[in-house]
Image (tube, rainbow, N blue to C red; front, side, top):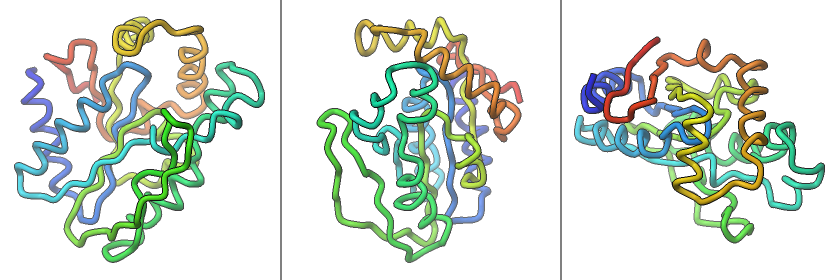
Length: 207
Protein backbone atom coordinates (compact mmCIF):
# COMPACT_ATOMS: atom_id res chain seq x y z
CA UNK A 1 0.00 0.00 0.00
CA UNK A 2 1.39 3.39 -0.93
CA UNK A 3 1.46 6.26 1.55
CA UNK A 4 -1.07 8.17 -0.57
CA UNK A 5 -3.50 5.27 -0.60
CA UNK A 6 -3.26 4.86 3.17
CA UNK A 7 -3.86 8.57 3.63
CA UNK A 8 -6.90 8.44 1.37
CA UNK A 9 -8.38 5.56 3.36
CA UNK A 10 -7.93 7.45 6.61
CA UNK A 11 -9.23 10.64 5.00
CA UNK A 12 -12.41 8.84 3.97
CA UNK A 13 -12.99 7.93 7.61
CA UNK A 14 -12.22 11.44 8.82
CA UNK A 15 -14.46 13.36 6.40
CA UNK A 16 -17.37 11.10 7.34
CA UNK A 17 -17.23 12.31 10.96
CA UNK A 18 -19.87 14.63 12.30
CA UNK A 19 -18.24 18.01 12.90
CA UNK A 20 -16.73 19.63 14.82
CA UNK A 21 -14.65 16.44 15.17
CA UNK A 22 -11.47 15.49 17.03
CA UNK A 23 -8.89 13.15 15.48
CA UNK A 24 -5.87 11.91 17.42
CA UNK A 25 -2.71 10.61 15.73
CA UNK A 26 -1.04 8.50 18.40
CA UNK A 27 2.09 6.35 18.44
CA UNK A 28 5.51 5.90 20.04
CA UNK A 29 8.51 8.17 19.71
CA UNK A 30 9.70 8.29 16.12
CA UNK A 31 6.58 6.73 14.65
CA UNK A 32 6.06 9.61 12.21
CA UNK A 33 3.03 11.13 13.94
CA UNK A 34 3.63 14.76 13.02
CA UNK A 35 4.45 13.97 9.40
CA UNK A 36 1.39 11.76 9.07
CA UNK A 37 -0.90 14.26 10.81
CA UNK A 38 0.31 17.08 8.55
CA UNK A 39 -0.24 14.95 5.45
CA UNK A 40 -3.68 13.91 6.71
CA UNK A 41 -4.58 17.55 7.32
CA UNK A 42 -3.64 18.33 3.72
CA UNK A 43 -5.73 15.53 2.23
CA UNK A 44 -8.72 16.34 4.44
CA UNK A 45 -8.44 19.98 3.36
CA UNK A 46 -8.29 18.87 -0.26
CA UNK A 47 -11.49 16.93 0.39
CA UNK A 48 -13.19 20.21 1.26
CA UNK A 49 -13.11 20.20 5.06
CA UNK A 50 -11.57 22.87 7.27
CA UNK A 51 -8.76 21.52 9.46
CA UNK A 52 -7.11 22.84 12.62
CA UNK A 53 -3.78 21.28 13.63
CA UNK A 54 -2.41 20.96 17.13
CA UNK A 55 0.18 18.90 18.98
CA UNK A 56 0.47 17.52 22.48
CA UNK A 57 4.06 18.79 22.41
CA UNK A 58 2.57 22.22 23.10
CA UNK A 59 1.06 20.95 26.35
CA UNK A 60 4.11 19.84 28.31
CA UNK A 61 4.52 20.60 31.98
CA UNK A 62 7.40 22.97 32.77
CA UNK A 63 10.82 21.33 32.98
CA UNK A 64 10.99 21.66 36.78
CA UNK A 65 7.79 19.64 37.13
CA UNK A 66 8.84 17.05 34.55
CA UNK A 67 12.14 16.37 36.30
CA UNK A 68 11.11 16.84 39.93
CA UNK A 69 10.99 13.09 40.61
CA UNK A 70 14.00 12.18 38.49
CA UNK A 71 14.22 11.14 34.86
CA UNK A 72 12.75 7.67 34.52
CA UNK A 73 10.22 5.89 32.31
CA UNK A 74 7.66 6.46 35.04
CA UNK A 75 8.20 10.23 35.09
CA UNK A 76 7.97 10.42 31.29
CA UNK A 77 4.64 8.60 31.56
CA UNK A 78 3.24 10.48 34.56
CA UNK A 79 4.81 13.95 34.60
CA UNK A 80 5.69 15.11 31.09
CA UNK A 81 2.34 16.19 29.67
CA UNK A 82 -0.19 18.56 31.19
CA UNK A 83 -3.30 16.60 30.30
CA UNK A 84 -5.52 18.79 32.45
CA UNK A 85 -4.51 21.84 30.40
CA UNK A 86 -4.87 19.87 27.17
CA UNK A 87 -8.44 18.99 28.07
CA UNK A 88 -9.37 22.35 29.52
CA UNK A 89 -7.84 24.57 26.86
CA UNK A 90 -8.22 22.51 23.68
CA UNK A 91 -10.12 19.24 23.69
CA UNK A 92 -13.09 20.07 25.93
CA UNK A 93 -13.91 23.28 24.03
CA UNK A 94 -13.89 21.36 20.76
CA UNK A 95 -16.12 18.73 22.29
CA UNK A 96 -18.48 21.52 23.43
CA UNK A 97 -19.01 22.44 19.79
CA UNK A 98 -18.95 25.38 17.42
CA UNK A 99 -18.49 28.77 19.03
CA UNK A 100 -16.54 27.56 22.05
CA UNK A 101 -13.23 29.29 22.71
CA UNK A 102 -10.01 27.29 22.77
CA UNK A 103 -6.24 27.57 22.70
CA UNK A 104 -4.10 25.24 20.61
CA UNK A 105 -0.84 25.98 22.50
CA UNK A 106 -0.19 26.22 26.24
CA UNK A 107 3.54 25.71 26.82
CA UNK A 108 6.60 26.26 24.64
CA UNK A 109 8.94 23.31 25.10
CA UNK A 110 12.02 25.04 23.66
CA UNK A 111 11.84 28.09 25.93
CA UNK A 112 10.09 26.31 28.81
CA UNK A 113 7.68 29.19 29.10
CA UNK A 114 3.88 29.47 29.02
CA UNK A 115 2.19 30.46 25.78
CA UNK A 116 -0.64 32.93 26.12
CA UNK A 117 -1.89 33.30 22.58
CA UNK A 118 -5.38 34.76 22.03
CA UNK A 119 -8.21 32.27 22.16
CA UNK A 120 -9.70 31.00 18.92
CA UNK A 121 -13.28 29.94 18.21
CA UNK A 122 -14.24 26.40 17.28
CA UNK A 123 -15.55 26.51 13.68
CA UNK A 124 -18.89 24.99 12.76
CA UNK A 125 -17.66 22.54 10.15
CA UNK A 126 -14.05 21.71 11.01
CA UNK A 127 -11.83 18.87 12.13
CA UNK A 128 -9.16 19.15 14.80
CA UNK A 129 -6.17 16.86 14.16
CA UNK A 130 -3.85 16.40 17.13
CA UNK A 131 -0.62 14.42 17.10
CA UNK A 132 1.35 13.25 20.09
CA UNK A 133 2.34 10.63 22.62
CA UNK A 134 -0.04 8.80 24.94
CA UNK A 135 -3.21 10.15 23.31
CA UNK A 136 -5.29 7.17 24.39
CA UNK A 137 -4.37 7.16 28.06
CA UNK A 138 -7.40 6.90 30.32
CA UNK A 139 -7.69 10.65 30.91
CA UNK A 140 -7.99 11.34 27.18
CA UNK A 141 -9.64 8.20 25.90
CA UNK A 142 -13.10 9.66 25.48
CA UNK A 143 -11.93 12.80 23.70
CA UNK A 144 -11.45 11.41 20.20
CA UNK A 145 -14.01 10.86 17.49
CA UNK A 146 -11.30 8.91 15.69
CA UNK A 147 -7.94 7.71 17.03
CA UNK A 148 -5.19 6.53 14.68
CA UNK A 149 -2.23 4.60 16.10
CA UNK A 150 1.02 4.54 14.13
CA UNK A 151 3.03 1.48 15.10
CA UNK A 152 6.79 1.04 14.68
CA UNK A 153 9.34 -1.16 16.49
CA UNK A 154 10.89 0.59 19.48
CA UNK A 155 14.45 0.40 18.15
CA UNK A 156 13.46 1.90 14.81
CA UNK A 157 11.51 4.71 16.45
CA UNK A 158 14.43 5.63 18.71
CA UNK A 159 16.82 5.52 15.74
CA UNK A 160 14.57 7.99 13.92
CA UNK A 161 14.50 10.30 16.94
CA UNK A 162 18.29 10.27 17.17
CA UNK A 163 18.62 10.97 13.45
CA UNK A 164 16.20 13.88 13.81
CA UNK A 165 17.24 15.40 17.15
CA UNK A 166 20.70 14.04 17.91
CA UNK A 167 21.86 11.62 20.64
CA UNK A 168 19.56 10.82 23.56
CA UNK A 169 21.04 10.64 27.05
CA UNK A 170 18.89 7.62 27.95
CA UNK A 171 16.82 6.05 25.15
CA UNK A 172 15.49 3.40 27.54
CA UNK A 173 13.61 6.10 29.44
CA UNK A 174 11.38 6.69 26.42
CA UNK A 175 11.12 3.05 25.43
CA UNK A 176 10.17 2.21 29.01
CA UNK A 177 7.49 4.89 29.07
CA UNK A 178 5.97 3.41 25.92
CA UNK A 179 6.06 -0.01 27.53
CA UNK A 180 4.07 1.34 30.48
CA UNK A 181 1.58 2.92 28.08
CA UNK A 182 1.12 -0.30 26.11
CA UNK A 183 0.67 -2.37 29.28
CA UNK A 184 -1.78 0.00 30.96
CA UNK A 185 -3.80 1.25 27.99
CA UNK A 186 -3.27 -1.20 25.07
CA UNK A 187 -3.48 1.65 22.54
CA UNK A 188 -3.55 -0.65 19.51
CA UNK A 189 -6.84 -2.07 20.78
CA UNK A 190 -8.30 1.32 21.63
CA UNK A 191 -7.52 2.94 18.27
CA UNK A 192 -10.06 2.94 15.46
CA UNK A 193 -7.21 2.50 12.96
CA UNK A 194 -3.78 0.93 13.45
CA UNK A 195 -1.12 1.61 10.82
CA UNK A 196 2.23 -0.16 10.62
CA UNK A 197 4.50 2.75 9.74
CA UNK A 198 7.77 0.82 9.67
CA UNK A 199 8.16 1.98 6.06
CA UNK A 200 6.51 5.40 5.83
CA UNK A 201 6.53 5.13 2.05
CA UNK A 202 4.44 1.95 2.31
CA UNK A 203 2.35 2.10 5.47
CA UNK A 204 0.07 -0.84 6.14
CA UNK A 205 -3.35 -0.51 7.75
CA UNK A 206 -3.43 -3.53 10.05
CA UNK A 207 -6.48 -2.87 12.16
